[in-house]
Length: 419
Ligand code: EPZ
Image (cartoon, rainbow, N blue to C red; front, side, top):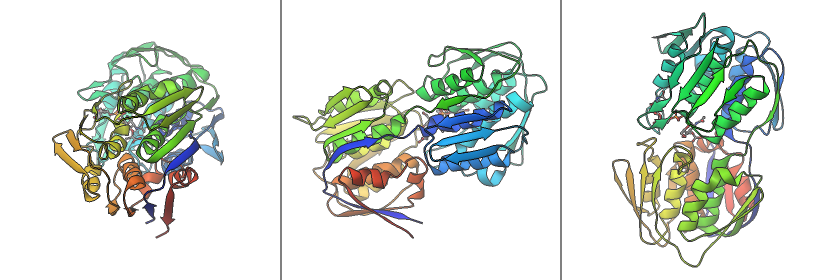
């Protein structure tokens, strides 16, 4: 297993091009199952999670061609059972259920296991499919769904932790070819849901209200092929802005949509950083003073759970006492123990981290766990004294396209050691 050596103390400056969004590309690639005609998806990031999704689509019978960031997919004749071996590697593969139901009225996928950020139920997805007339059976770790006639219905996507992003997308993809109208209440408002809706509309779907809590879908007979460019990855952009906050003189992220990042740039400005927006670019510089923060992770448009670990790394070296409460995945704190190995002073009280800033962390061997926790450890190493060795780097490669190369282009000194 590869590892990353982060040699601390190198200041960052310059501009980094942000890739297409992983969390938008995954459901959009799955949505190509809804038509026999070819689809072209551009700005698809080169990530292992994307590779897994393309492998699943190929196994289902799709013709898949990839040339750098452009993917051509043609789902002329497809199977409806996804292979456990690949599905088990990526929870997001659950988003093939909706399009398989919409297109073939049946689907069999292994139930996603839990992961280090906590239990990852799909009860809301399944309840949504049942509301549309599907029969759901769970046996042997697989979920088998049959829906001879998909009918439009009123569906709620609310969980006690907030709306489900992939659940909203899954029900939307099943409903676009159902008879009649579906209304999704408590829909997730994330930009990735809007991007998926825009792709479905380009295929001929009739969808209104994406990006709000209430989405209406009027079923149509069939969908045709379409071309689509994936939106920028707001979490990759946020991660590089926090890298700039931790160890930057002047860092610019380009090819972003600043409107998707206000929940990240506002706290960074509140913490004392100078944030400048210009077109599709955001620049961060140190400000006159630094302030501790109190943050809660909530569904979009609030502060995103996917930025919680990275913000912990910044607040670990910010004077004063900061508090971060994780409301979406209450167990999502694998990074805390590792940051403490680097000298951070953090007290975890349930789903709240109380962080007492220290002047500097010290480099240490640390263990990557979930995707964002791993990125947080690399960011912490940027300012740490000495070298931080981040093991199990495959976690980072799932969601970041060449993060070590991009940081080195900004002035960091990071080595990737092939195991
Ligand atoms: C998406 O996951 C993202 N993944 C996650 O990003 C992100 O953290 C999450 O949304 C929240 O923003 C992709 O888009 C591929 P949820 P998703 O269903 O859709 C509970 C990353 O780092 N819930 O919105 O799977 C659930 O347990 C990844 O890029 C139910 O209770 O998350 C959680 O507490 C990590 N029942 C909350 O809802 C359900 O049926 C939000 O989960 C579904 C979810």
